[in-house]
Picture 1 (cartoon, rainbow, N blue to C red):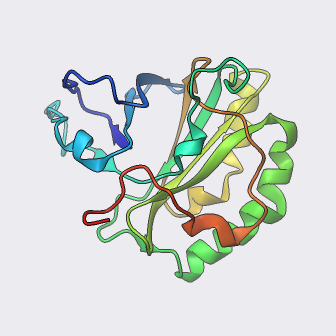
Picture 2 (cartoon, rainbow, N blue to C red; picture 1 turned 180 degrees about the horizontal axis):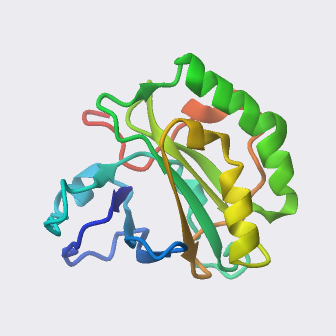
Picture 3 (cartoon, rainbow, N blue to C red; picture 1 turned 60 degrees about the horizontal axis):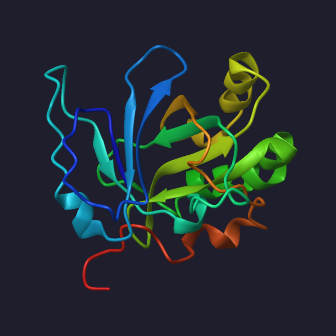
Length: 195
C-alpha cells in the first residue's frame, strides 16, 4: 500500500485494490491511499513534492483482507481511519520493547474499548521485522467521539497520529485479531522483492 500526502498521478490500471483520497478530520493535509497486490505496481506511482518540506510518502505492507472486495455483504459503512506513521529511518523493529508494550496495551484495553465500533486494523509493515506504524478503521457517532477514540490508540506513543474520514466500501468489517502473535502474518500487500 502506498500512503502519500503529496499529489500523485496514477498510471492506468484496473488492478489497484483501492485508490482513494481521504480527508483529515483536523483540516490538515489529505492522504492518498493506494493499495495494490504487487509492490511493482506502486513503483509506477510518482508522488510530486508539494514544495512544503520533504515529501511524506510511505510504501508499506498490510493484510489484503482489510479491504472490501466490493460485495455489499463484505463492505463496511463509512467511518474513521486512525493512522500512525513512524517517520524514523530505519523503522522500529517489532521486537523493540516500545512495540511490544504497544501491542500489549492494544490487545488488553484499546481494542476492547472500541468494541463493536472496530472495523479492521493492523500494523503497517516495512518488512518482516520492522513496523512503520499502524492503522485502525472504526465507526463512531461523530467526529468528536472519533477524535477521543483515536487519542486512546497506544500506537500514538511511537509515531505521528492522524485521523481521516473514509467513505463506505473501502474496508471490510472483521473481528479484532486474537492476540499479539498475528502481527507478522502473511500475505501482505507490497510483498518484498524476490518472494
